[in-house]
Length: 57
Image (cartoon, rainbow, N blue to C red):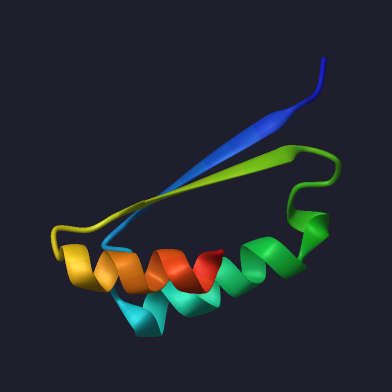
């Protein structure tokens, strides 16, 4: 069975916080090893959330 990790980012519309976090999660494979990563972005500001979703993709 493969391992999986789910990270929920509350307040993901914050560019100063979320860009660094997303960058680290994607590029630092030592954090997860061989686990699958699911990142869930949550924010009350829909426009800011969409911007961060586009960045993450």
